[in-house]
Image (cartoon, rainbow, N blue to C red; front, top):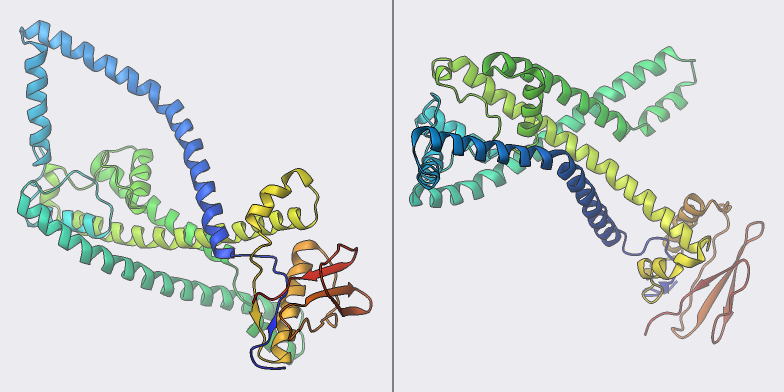
Length: 393
């Protein structure tokens, strides 16, 4: 085999990562549209009712105390500006003393951003930009390192449990058992389930503490834990903001630790779920490719042809016969897994050509293997024939 020779074999997956990107973007857009319709249906009536109630109360107050609505609205506008600086109608703790400032930088660092506290001075806003650039980057690195160690630990624990279970099963010969221990790997579904249980345990424990210390219902505390641990941070519920919390340093420390643990665990869970989503995308792409290659839906073939174009075939460089054979075997395995076609392991041919203007047609016989057949000129469809496109010059 000459160095630089090429093997043009058909591929079931053209630009797989690009296909993942576009397919995931379309699915996210559809998911957002559906969720927006659901939230609009659920929340819009309550919003209209709240507006009506507010307008009625404003008119009643204006009439009772002989104050114009315009003056009331002007006063409320000033209050909204003062609220940004930490002014509350109810007694609350100081926002910009050292504990309050530490709580603020923690919400920025963890990307939660409740919105209760925000810098009001120009110097503070400028400093926040530079602080956020470094702190958020360092936090992302910390989360990734935490994820690596959690996955390693969970994989080890699952492996030990699997080995313990194997010891209680039927006794096998030592060589088979050792080889099974080496080849066995924990499933991502098992890791995701364990992470989900860990997040649920942390959230339930934190919700119990918050419901007692903040006066929330248990459901409201669970809702706050999800919003905070997922770094969404709406700001409708914020912990450790009441006046009497200033005299309870133990609760302040526990709140910071729970936030850190919850965010790390939830970040790990999101990453594990993203792996499962990518596996689902692979399955969906294989299904679309099967629908295109098997011609089961002729009406959709133009759409599939856009997703799997024939004009840009992938080219794989074969340095030697062994490498080329491995690549063809890998393709046959993909074809077997995707299309349900049983191909023997010995059914491997060398689709090789030193002339770039030659079209190579590989005739596949599942009983006798693949026989290379070279045809000059155009290729005509035949049953049981796989076509290999000409090399581009």
